[in-house]
Amino acid sequence: MNAVYILWLRQLKRYFRSRARMIGSLGQPTLFLLALGFGLGPSFARAGRGDYVQFLAPGIVTMGILFTAVFSGIEIIWDRQFGFLKETLWPRCRGSRSCSGKRSGEPRSR
Image 1 (cartoon, rainbow, N blue to C red):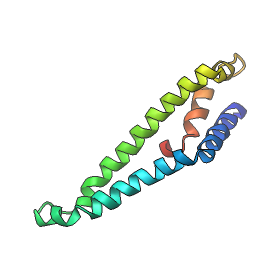
Image 2 (image 1 turned 60 degrees about the vertical axis):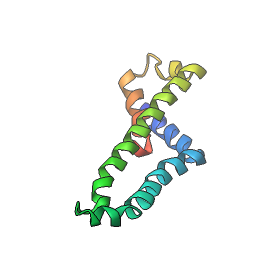
Image 3 (image 1 turned 180 degrees about the vertical axis):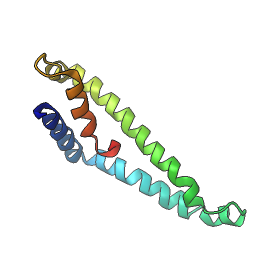
Image 4 (image 1 turned 90 degrees about the vertical axis):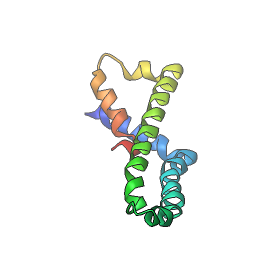
């Protein structure tokens, strides 16, 4: 369990140290919700289709999950390139523990 905690803590530190990543992960859904949801909402309601924010919210959540998945895959490639992936797959620690530690540390995929 110690390996899972260490990898989880590493992922959270990397997230909070990357200001651009925090702005992107929190600002993108907010921007889409404000600009599209409340900007196009009145014209959508005039067409008689209901609430546009309720229509838009599942797409924004799905887009956030896909955005996180893509960056998680890119991080695995970076870890492999810099040698960290080889160190985490050391024989004393099972691969499932290192995988679960990295995945639980992703703030958007909880």
